[in-house]
Length: 225
Image 1 (spheres, helix red, strand yellow):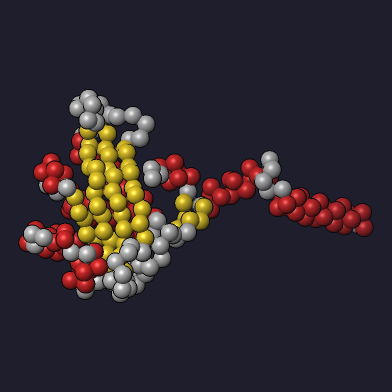
Image 2 (cartoon, rainbow, N blue to C red):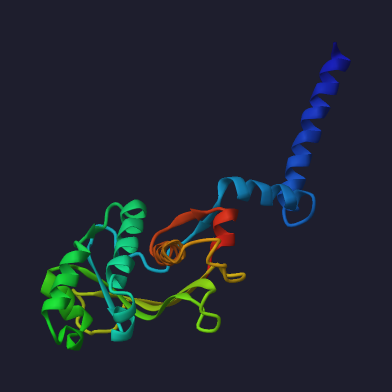
C-alpha cells in the first residue's frame, strides 16, 4: 500500500512538472503547438481602436462621388444598411439613428456636404458621426468587364459632436476586395451576390475596429483590411 501511494504521488509530481514546463516553454514545440491550439478554440482577444461609442447615439453618414451614385443608386443605403446591421449585432448599447432619415435629408439639402461632420451630427442631435467617404465602389474589374470582383475603398472617420474642434476621434482607410485571390466568372455567382459579400466584409472590418471582441482562425483568414 505504501508503495502504491508513493507511485501515485510521483505521478502527481511528474504531471505538475510537465504542466510547469509547458507554461514556461509555451513558445516552443510541442507546448507552443498546444498553446496555439487553445487559442484557436478560445479565440484571440482583439482590442478596439476606438472605445467611444458605448451608450452613445450615432448617425451613419455616407458621402460618395456623383459617378458612384449614377452607377449604383442604392450605394448609400447598401453601405449604411450593412454597417447598421453589424453595429446592432455587435454593439447593442449603441443607439443608431435611422440611416434612411440621413439619406432623405441629404437628398433634400443641396449643399449638405459643405457642412462640417460635427455640425451634421448636431443637426440630428447625436453624440457621434460615423462618416464614410466612399472612394471606390465596384463589382466588376475595369479590365475584362465580364469578370466579377467586388471592390470597396473608403475613408472612415468618427467625429464626437461634444468636442470643440472638428478633428476626427478615429480614422481608418478600408480597402476591400472580394474575392481577394482572383475574379469570378459570371456563371459562378451573380453581380448582386458579389456586392453583398463585399459589403459584408467591409461592414465587418469597420465594426471590428470599434469594439473589443474575440477573433477566431477562420475569421482572421477572412480579414481584408
